[in-house]
Length: 371
Image (cartoon, rainbow, N blue to C red; front, side, top):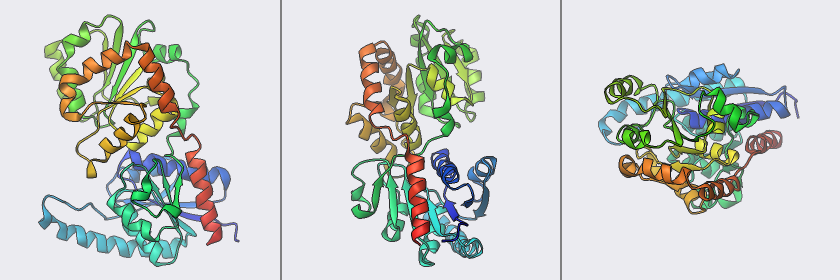
């Protein structure tokens, strides 16, 4: 076939969709440097900045999510969907891709649906253990669905599923710093156990309240230090409250951690939400983790992600509504239990799929060449 390989990748909305999308694009470029790759995202969402920053062109659709609580607001959403479908058709007609890839997020629905109607092969990448509504609908006409968890034939045709794992940020795998070097880089005490608490770039209220409610317990731990990413959204409020409560000396507070690879290398134990992308990173790094799933996600999929690991003794789990009371005591008990840390690390490492991006890229290229 013509060497001019042309691929559309659509989706976004959160880092959990964008990081895999960019990783797949990078893996395609590594295999086929001449490939022309066009992203299609949702106007006003973070992919419109993150994708160009990664070196790729992106087109935006005026698509938005349905409001499940206030149904009357969805008239405008339907109008945006109709306009997005027309725009997606024009983008596809102009670009003429040989394959379209959907990674989840608002834009992937209209883009992949139109691609399918135009006879273009489509590949879906489902990050979660519980499939989203859009991917379930698109899967009926998709050539291939790449998944990260066992048992996904509940949602998709079994013959079209490939267990590839989730692609992750490449820079996490490229860090060569030892634990001691990472601790030094973060200006932490190398003689103490380290607990890293992250709630995503914007933060997580229940994780933050768990820390604020247990400052005296944190202060009493002479052999443990805590690194707390509050999230930029909550940073100002937390700084005000800490000023009144007095921040413990063994608690390092950061609104955002730019170098997550170093932070992970420094940590003996991580406390995190249960997004699919984060979980894939913990698997690759063999990082002991306590997962606190967000309750504010579709189909409660973060709890399902967490339980898929808990069943294999590869992570610990604290429900969001119990976090304020039990999370910090659980973390302290765990980080002091060397045998538990080793067991969690070994079990989660067994779930890693380090070649996910390359494997998906090979499938994308195969579909494009088969037509």
